[in-house]
Image (tube, rainbow, N blue to C red; front, side, top):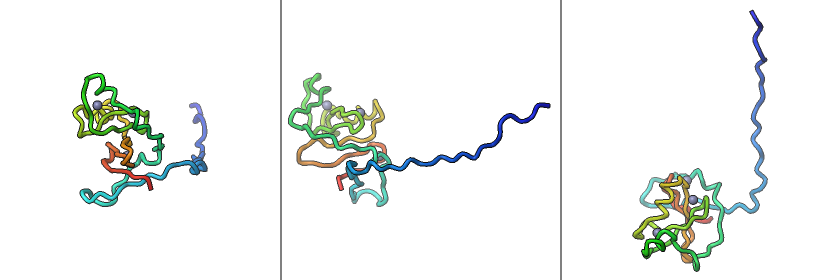
Length: 126
Ligand SMILES: [Zn+2]
Ligand SMILES: [Zn+2]
Ligand SMILES: [Zn+2]
């Protein structure tokens, strides 16, 4: 009989310390009277705050179809712009369905929030 190969190791994973928080945006879950308290978004730490360029943003899917839209949303993962759920095309939602990218940011200049399709919570900048 051969001996046992290898020996048990007791390596431990040491979590890397995150010291890059200085430029991180502060997003938090917005209070929502229609939902139970304690909702969380597990993607909030991955959210960047892309520059808002609402003046020349378009929903390219709607442009191609000749549709109008109501409001625009911007994918927080890849920056794709799509129209909101009140719009005819709902292309921001379609983008989430197609890609699984969880969070969209409002592109309206009078709005400052994000929506997570996965956790179904509004997020606002703290
Ligand atoms: Zn989330
Ligand atoms: Zn659209
Ligand atoms: Zn995306």
